[in-house]
Image 1 (tube, rainbow, N blue to C red):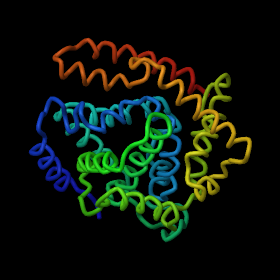
Image 2 (image 1 turned 180 degrees about the vertical axis):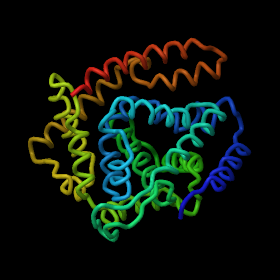
Image 3 (image 1 turned 180 degrees about the horizontal axis):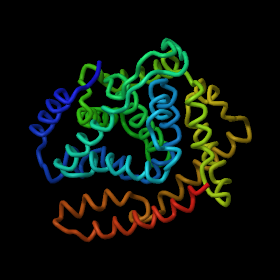
Length: 316
């Protein structure tokens, strides 16, 4: 079922009514969404989340038909995460504005599949604002965030996982996803992911393989060895069936690299100062709550440096 503008607005009204502190936004400094989401190292799981999303034929075809990901990788990266960071770390007004912005973009993303994929016939229609497709994309992000956080930072208790899942319901409402679509508890969420990984709904077709291959090979020649390492880490994080479907090698040599990398990253992360470890958007949010604009200037400086580096790294 498609999420229309009316459904989205009803969802946003409910979110606004439940928001205790509009300055802190939908989550705030005491939330797990902030504790987990502030970790810059979560980007290690970006390849995993992207490939899981692309395994859904609707997502892969939509990216192939409508996205500028491959033509403007840096710009797409910046625009996507500006919206996500506004939703998670922004005040209430910024979160709602980002939700409307993303919904309007998704409204234009519709078309037909080029090829048969699992239960979807060639020529069958797809649309980005379908509630099930929207939740699958969110689930890949939530599941990957937990996986990487536990792998590199610390284990989470069952109670914390339940709390995190409850918080992500607020994020889902920013897309108009109804509660009925979202698993009721952590056990149901894990079962949902396992079911999807093994379902015929996920089929790595031609668009998914082409986009995945290009994404994992992007970069300036001097940093392509780094992308080779990132390819191994992505393979290690993926479910086995989908790793094989993408043709990603993960034999004894890759497993050894993965295990050693996890040990080194985990040890290094504990010694890294917060200013280098956490995202600028997190510090900007803390500064906003203190009534200061200092972190805003720092955030702009860091983002500018990242963009300049991105232009060089992603240049092909």
